[in-house]
Length: 327
Image (tube, rainbow, N blue to C red):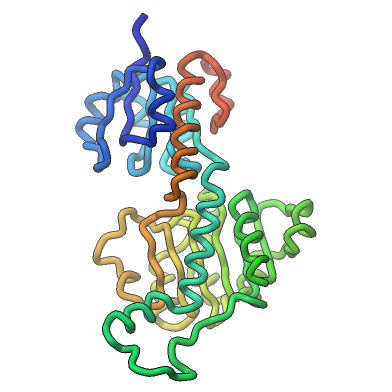
């Protein structure tokens, strides 16, 4: 009996690849480079399953070409690059990898917070260029995390993990989101407020919400002007949650103190992106989940989701359960 034909955009960790053995006949579009769009379009009609890493938009036209496709297993927790409605209409299951990258992403948010607060980018440059010639009471001085107010936008698993870490630094926690999470407020010493109140009161604002129609462009000029002039914006959610042009103005014109970013409107970031020129903006290349245990967990979940779907079972992390009515 022939095995289902599966395509992977890139090679994932052995924790996932080893699970595929004996279950599917897989082909890699790329080992570690960017998948060739021509190869993707050529092979999509043959695919019964996909394991998709970042970088490919799956829209209605994509699914229309994928005549045999049963499951698109995402190697990510976010699925804003997928037209979920179209996938459902074509009877295609979409799965993701939640939970396993929570700690790594929360760690990244704290790293960006610390780097921004203590001017790590600027201070390291000065030292490497020989600018550290003497000790001075006013040299290299940054912001304190202890006793500062952290406002968290999106209080899901990652947002709560950030709050837990921030408490260890002695920070005061505000949060906002679609729904109040009263069951976590006492444990995390967190106060539920409106977005406007959070922006006005916070010394650091951490974006940890999903990208939806409601959150796209959530932080734009109006919101940035609400923030304190010495406040810092941290984004490990999705780039499109922030109006990037407005953020450049905010950081370059002094509306806010600066920003720490791991996600962007366009990825990879073009080299002519104005934010790259600002020393008060710390920028990382979307490394939120780039830790060994997180990536191994993502690979494992992506493989399990794929196999379960192809073998006629409901995958554990099904994004569009309504598709089951069409299968």
